[in-house]
Image (cartoon, rainbow, N blue to C red; front, side):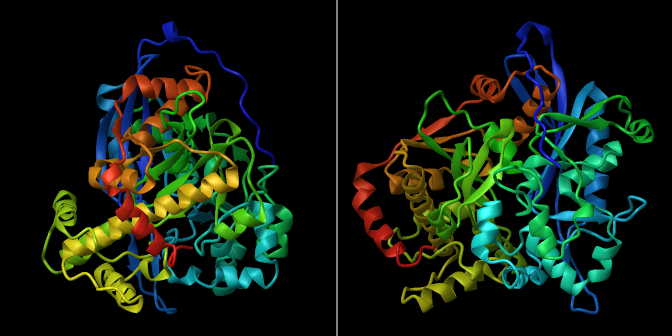
Length: 512
């Protein structure tokens, strides 16, 4: 099952009056149905429907499981599509979501239970179990992925031990966007960018590594053919079209179904720019766009990953905890009856001392703590630092620590790629935190270029336009992005250099 790239398409600005593409964009906290109105030179975005994405903890005999409420998501998506169709003729529909998680289907195409959330505790031992059969170094040399306990490969290893009956009943594995594409079209495909988050693809051939899966006891028959970003999955089911008020011939198109891959497609890189990217949201993903994977012992040691992008590119990157840290501080306050907005939290961080504590954002204790504030305080006490005493001090510690981890990752990218990077592009919702953008520029000592905020939705819709031949290639997508969205540049403050250099020296004692 090899990835087949689409044939060359032709750019024709005059051909397009306006086409409206429907991008379904699901994140870890919320989902949206977005209309991308494309006129051949620019795209404008309209949110048709926004809704929460709340996982549920479901008790069972084994203690319980954290699951995605996929039926609620499907109901919200359906509502969003109805709203979108009221005022627009939809040219295409495509779905992007977070990575790694999946649904298993039986022989009738019925879902075998809610998909498990990547933060569920049952994934914890998957890496250890897999490494007893195939060494970590061999798994990395084959797949090129950073070792994270929730990678699909390790979820399946855990499932094989804890619930083998479900795995035996499964006839198809569909990642979250693949599952939604199946419900929309009736076609089962595994889109390349989302499949590349699984740690089950051969990084060089970009096809399923069936030999590795057989060694680990994972049935290869559940895998589907791989669809390239910018290809057609199928057409909308006729019965569903009637329910939604959408033409049943509407194409279901594969964007880059991993949300980060769609966001990176919309990074407004200029030609020959020496820049890294950072997709900033619940997770921060920092990396480089490359033609081929980097699979050295050093990249393995540093925990870099090689995921698939648009036009057969490689997203060479590192996953960093991201604004999850602040989201969890806010949730902890909400449980106490204090509903504090993100703007207020950021202002409190601005007012906190710049000489506060710092920590390694990717320490395991921050993965799913009961109270993020206490997890940060505990880390600080254990490392001989004064623990934060206020919410503002906790948020400041989180933001400072993210900026420091960004610098550490940026410098490691330069090391392993042999490039001298000049700028950092940040896209996604995290660009709205201008304080974090400024301290990142100060910490790196490099200009930080922010925008667009809606990179994922823009990328999703423009890749759909590429699937229909309205855009020629990835370079044209970025030309449209530059035409359509403003960016903001944060320049480093030289007066802050010494302070950040001192903090970074301390951070090196924690970094991993």
